[in-house]
Image (tube, rainbow, N blue to C red; front, top):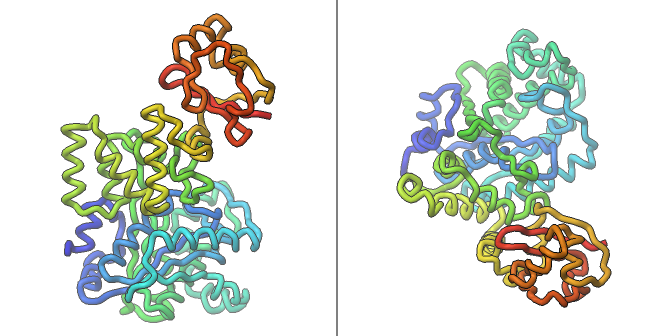
Length: 420
């Protein structure tokens, strides 16, 4: 089996380590518990959140035990890391809903049923019962103010404003690491590059409570970037979420399959669990037969299967093939609505109209003369069915779920008609 740290380095997943040599010795001698935390700031994670988690999953595949911390307590405060302003505080009820959503997504990524099965914890279980005097006496005394001011997440906000609430965040995360060290034997924290300051605070808390010979470690993952300099993880409609209600499996699949040639091998290394030999073989296809987009198809399939399962992947592929061939009849009404969610749309009444009047009113054709030509030339399709008779009347039978219709003019010009 490939050395884990060598594999992480090859994949570009090692940014900073607190003690690289000590970490390598630890992993070579024993199976360890290590953790990564996610604050429930929303009821779903997006793809930018999952790189540290997927890295933790790689540790699990090498026999180590992942601890998944959902920040029911820290999520009520807000991490100042990487932010220029205070977060809006959320209610306890909203955070509880967010925690449940994130837990479901964790269960999709990790194995919970093996000897080294993942453990899920919520830091509200130990932070929530701590009173303010206990916090200040037992932990506030451990960390010097000058030490905290040296953290980028804190120093970068001194001019624009930082509440004591967010100022204290790094210490509370340090309490988490110490709690997991004491109660779960956790020796390593994994996080994104913006978490370096919080991770090192945790190591400082552990050292102060125990002794200088205590061995705990921190690893951070580089920020994922795109080759063209634009932000990773955004599609035309916004963030790419793991929740199927926020980003459908088809949209999720399309995000990955549209990856640029300059990024696809990098993403295969970071996001998939494919072996090095298979990724290197796909790299050859990018260089020699890029038009086939084999690497992109593999990336899209691996990621959609991981997050949404095989059935959702099969559906995403079926929608994609139907759109490519123009055979919309192969799709269900719900699949069609999903596939065309982002195409131009227009609202119309449910009155019956001749096909020519209908496509002119829907701005599919610019004039009645052009509309008649489009129909007789076979350029107009309703829900995948060609309409070639200018006497055709558009009626309720053409409405899908009595709500919408997809009209195509030519090969690629689609419009969704929404009926009101």
